[in-house]
Length: 437
Image (tube, helix red, strand yellow):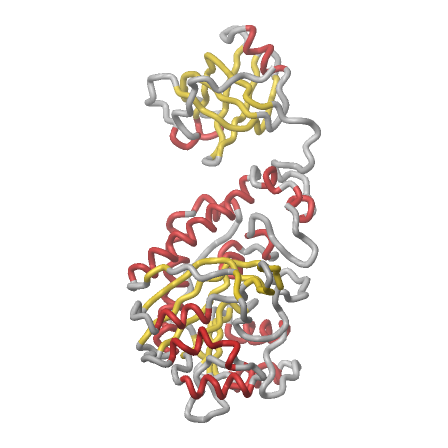
């Protein structure tokens, strides 16, 4: 029979325990391990901060406690009240000698996956039981780092003077045109899940807010089935008035460097569990022109025609040549969105991509702020300006020059944690095959 919580409340997480605590403590967590050595039993209790050993010597512990523990299964939920003692043989050099134990929830056996990580489990099976997968300290470390990453991104951008905004996720018009959209039924109308906050960020530049950022979901109906693509991801976006593309490139590289430094300093235990040696990339990041990137690919036997985007082998080839974070600049205007500002040479745009040696992380540009040029570029890309009236109206009454970028949060987390599959850094990934859980 399971116990009731009653008036018991946790007093300490595992990492907060120390031998100087004189009063009884109450710990709470899951049974990670059970050992019966005959005459003494050991429970390893795990919480989100770590593990602690509960020691039950048969001669010093009430019979009812021994009976209760003898029937318990791994991953059951316990609360333990007792005294903290030093013991160098125990994890962390401490143990808890229990006075009372409550079994709040019995775990069924067998478990669908190995929580300890001692058995190699297929990623699909782990994702099917994500609640159990997160009990693995290595998996949990990824999401502690994810939390810290978003916290530090916000801190950095707010120090830079940015104001957080929230854009709609149900829209009437595609951000960039194309067919990579999820249609939804919106009363009598057809609507779409938003591909990007891009148009709304730019509208804010006409409001006088000057600097805005958003961290939120975006949706793309791409039929990719790779380790680097999902259909719902988190995008970190900024837009900045009275700036050009070089200004926001500087913000982006400083942000990456800052986040790396903070993770290295404050998530050392999590990085250790991931066996990841994280070093902040040096500033400034190298800038190479699109033409140079094409030449690198062609020299390495990956044929690229001017005006094409880079395939995955091309990105890797350039990454091997550069060796660290870098920007590709001076992209052909024809392969960048209609809102990317052309240079004086009309075929080149003030657009850039931020690249990791393995993959693209971010795209950005100085934006077109002339309504006439916007309409012209829309028409050139087979878009109908009348369908973007809500967006174009913002350019009629005073729109400053502005620039911005969108950064893939999951791609950044792959780079930080070293995880090879983007699904490992998302709690509940959504791809072509996965809609549950």
